[in-house]
Amino acid sequence: MTQYAAPGQPGSVVAYRPRYDHFIGGDYVSPVSGEYFENVTPVTGEVFTEVARGTDADRARALHAASSAAPAWGNTTARVRATVLGEVADRIEEHATELAVAETWDNGKPVREALVADVPLLIEQFRQFAAVIRTEVGQVEQLGPDTCDYRTFQPLGVVHERLPWTFPLMNAGRVLAPALAAGNAVVLEPAQQTPASIHVLLGVIADLLPPGVVNVVTGSDDHRVVSGRCPNIFFSDVVAQRDSFLDKALEGFAMFAANQGETATAPSRALIQTAAYEELLHLATERTQQLRSGDPLDTDTTVGAVVSLAQRDRVLAHIERGKAEGARLVTGGEADGHFVRPAILEGDHRSAVFADDVLGPVVSVTRFDDRDDALKIANEATAQLGAGVWCRDLALAHNVGHDLRAERVWVNNYHAYPANTAALAGYRRVKHLLVSYSDRGQSGF
Image (cartoon, rainbow, N blue to C red):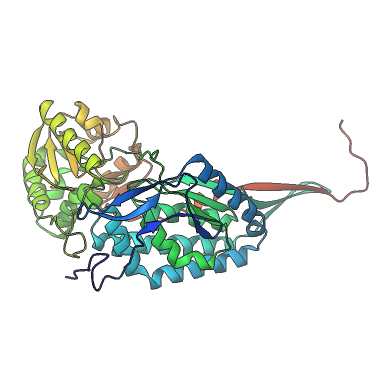
């Protein structure tokens, strides 16, 4: 167990400034309006810094700075950009603990999660895209006996993105890594709930980037977070033996509480086959009750603080709504400040609480009879960013995974993340250079 000192306390690995301006054109500049807002850490509920409140005038300044910096950055070679991204990754790795504590203090998640998932994935994003652009080549297609299509990639120019509050640093990396790799300049607007940790990141990497290539404007409150209502399906053979597979499956059930459920791919619906329903629900409840809520800066803590009091109230209202619809609260749901004990609701999958998600540590549990029944219930959700399948019969697991409508399906795990290098396509365009090397005139017109 490691207990990290809170920012502002002796021995802390991270120090926040008393106030943060916008970061525009490679420097900190005051907001045009002169307004700031207080940033509260969900860990203690106390204000720990002030942050500039952004307006359209601030965004215009940031976009202008990005537009000025974009041509030079976009004209650098892929090798140069790959080298810079590699240096960024190395610098983040050097400051990994500092950034993990900063993320925890800003968002409320357990620092153990930031240390083993968020920051390592942030590093990997920059390394992956550096590798992609360093090794890729253009394409040439022969369109006729004397005409070629030379295809290369060009940046869009300026990328302007608002970030959700669910994974402040990792979401920043999901934009920065591919956008910078493609040759764009970037304007980021972190969520009002989590505006501070990105400034710690800037303090680590800003000197590696040309001025204006990365700009940050804070204070916008328009940051919608998509929830996926992801199903997690448990077939009866999961409990056939008391072994490591069963233990892993129970851990997969409890993943609904990871990151306090504040992720679009949290398994917030659990479907358990009728033949093993009572037994598996009992074991899953025991595992959920073993989750440790507490100080997020303690590496033994597994469930941290909900990002804000407003979000906490939405979670509690969601639980009460479920109970009003007839769902049984199996365990959890108690609140203390920003903290909510992970809750299990058991009920009818046709009720509204099963259809809606709240981005909190709440799972709705129901039963299914067979494969077709499981797919029917699971595919009722219109938005499925992810899904899980737990089954010792791998043929059945593959079959069900194929038929789920989710974008990503975890089979007998719920934590592996694939590389998303395809995201690069969203930050650049394909340039076609159609060249004729014939001296004859064109025909057919």
